Length: 102
Ligand code: HEC
Image (tube, rainbow, N blue to C red):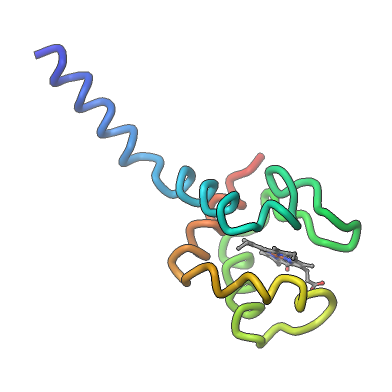
């Protein structure tokens, strides 16, 4: 009985926070961290953007635009090269993670 309760709690926790965990893992796996830095706060170059706390929908749109080439200004060429690594669904999860960084 007790074990069942613990299991139920563990499952509930896993269901409650998937976006954050996945987005963070993707941010680290898909090389984003190399340019945008730890917790998206310390970019590699001074003219690269800090992403922590950014509006999720805005970040999602910018990533899709950089991936498709609709946004091709400033230093976007640096980032476009890795965008084949992420799907639209993964972009959405990463955007959610970025918006939740305090
Ligand atoms: C090779 C370096 C590099 C990598 C790797 C990279 N980015 Fe970027 N990213 C940039 C640069 C540079 C810009 C700003 C482009 C410009 O000057 O307009 C940018 C812009 C962005 C923006 C838009 C910011 C805004 O305020 O409009 C988001 C969101 C973003 N990156 C997320 C990511 C994510 C998520 C990943 C991993 C999938 C990633 N980037 C990988 C260099 C990189």
